[in-house]
Image 1 (tube, helix red, strand yellow):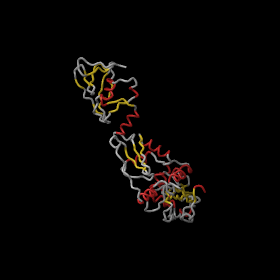
Image 2: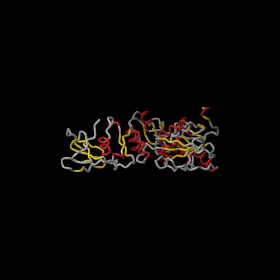
Image 3: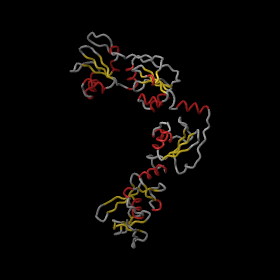
Image 4: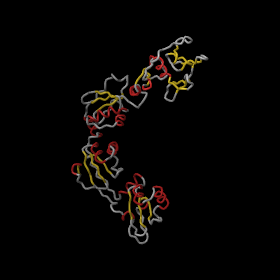
Length: 377
């Protein structure tokens, strides 16, 4: 620990331990003693005011003015493990009275509270049915609390909710708002529980029964909630929610799924050709190989799958597809193409049928009317 030694030559300034060439005031002004010049310093991209000082051994160091002030006027032995916080969030105000030693966690929390950072957003939530209010230091803490109550919400979903006004009510029947020093004591807006509100909450909730049709297996499964469907199918919950909200049409989705609410009366779509429908929606994906000797056609659901089976590299496959588009074969005796480019191609040399008809399972109609719950599968 060092004691504060005030300069006789420069009243109001203190000597800086290990930097005998300089003196500093408690508002962060630094003077170079040999010529009396007050150092202008610089401002870094984060907005902090810095000065470059040469220590008594001749090494040059860059100090934040705020940190240097605390180092001189309120020295702590563990200062290397601590950060200096601007109490009011003003990085240009480096007076000792406006600064404090804090842990990194405390500093991040304060930055979120004052709106200087989004790394740690203090949050307040209110349950509309009970009126109970809870405060959290971060989106993660809020997410963990709600999940422990049986409401599985990710930190990203919490952040999205906080960006809305606190008059919004979400399906878990909770209001959210970003907590600041200003609104901490402000009353919440009371939400009138009307029939229209209940309809809206049930419409966009995560606890609604959903039907998921796996077009490849032709199996339709019923789930009691989006959370349950997410667990059993591996489809991300946010994707399921967005797909269900799409009221325009029932589309074939990534993973060969079609999803809708259980109370959705629209009939399942009919796919005459699954692979073609998929590629028309999401771009070429399915790869076809045609053996030149036998005319045997094989379909792969991805380039990776084709490369592994055929023993060629991804670059080689890409070259062969783009160069020939299935029109001629390569030394291994195979032609390569994207399915969307050759599905209606008639095979040469007397082979009967077009490519699509020679691949088993390309035609899929609507699934049977019965529906299976996860327990029965």
